[in-house]
Image (cartoon, rainbow, N blue to C red; front, side, top):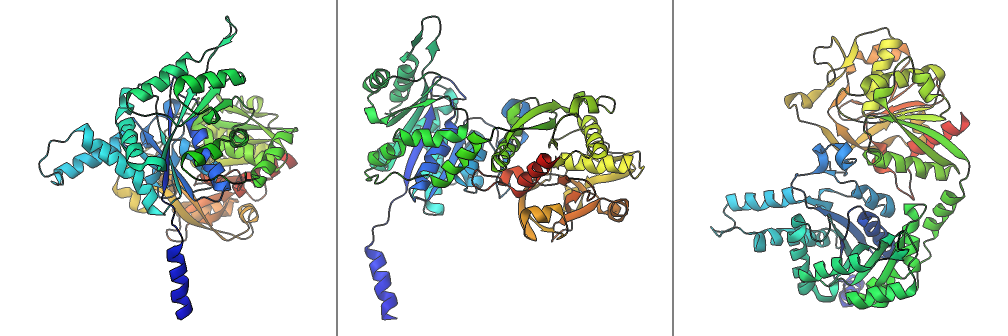
Length: 544
């Protein structure tokens, strides 16, 4: 007992590191890669042994990206607790291996909703509610909440949009206040752009100077600048930017175009970005970490020369609509020493008549997720071709449901088999709203759910364990009333939810690799821990 008290006393003498905050802002133009820079900072600090998390604040008024059109906004990434979020959270998880929750994502819509709810409950005691201080206080509360949840050493906060956007002003004001309140425990990393004028043959720093001036005009002096550029920046250019923007020379980092986004952390480390951040916060950087496992992955990624052609069948033309699937395929390819070449195919253009012409020559086919009827006929035609020609096929969410419908129509001869989502009056609703979802047209099964695997299945061979947990985002399910009919016809239901008995994974065991998942395995696939199903699919595609 005395030893226990003595140990506690020693712990009390050890200084506890206060949570430190890194704010990532952007200027000049959008889509510079704030999410990649935020993820890279997190990765580098992790490599130094720090406990980190990354969060995103988006200025739009939508409550979350869950109902935004993927053609406009890209994929809706899903956290383990079921929050629909911006695709940047996928970058955070793939780079760092952390698991995000709804606390890692906020929008202006959620911030205002929280303030209005408090006002209605009388928490402001009749005061006039204003952007400053009430909205900014709510933003600050949510930023600092992450530091309190798990005692993180660093909280990296990405602010969506660019400096100068009217929507971003409350967030910048909140950052200004926090930097003043926290002192050296808060730094601002500003990502900006150095354009190259081809006609003049010159790099122009003026847009960056104006962007920093805009940030300074709201009271924020950036501590580090990250300069996005298509051309290598000479030392005189970096020195000029440092001088004109009041930033230390060793805190001006260039981010050139690279063959892969996964090279960015190494590039940032080579320029001393993580060390500069630590020095700004009064921490001695110490030795530079090796990033051993990350560099090993990069070597395999860069040295994978043999191409593997994979078709991605879906209805959304924006490639970011399938961002996590694409990255999961690239990563799994690297671990199989293959350079995956993905060709997107719009499912609206596929028919039974042209499916072979379109899909012939691909080593594997992924049938992507989605909502609504548009493009589903083409997905069914693609699946029929793949099943009949025994092409390795991976159906995800709606893709899995189309596998079920195609099998019912063309193998079981239930010609009008359909999903209630696609035809409310279908007589053979092999896909339907199930159980508790029937009470609400807007209810969805979203977030992480358990799944128990059959041992004699390709899925079990991939995961090498009986119980897994994967993330969902859908309302319709396989209708268990047809369970026996399908199994008797040759489709195996190899994964089921242990609590609800809902089908999670289907397989055709006589095929090389024909697997459909009701969940989204791409949400659980990271650089250092790729999802087993993607690895297995790529292995099957290589074998052919």
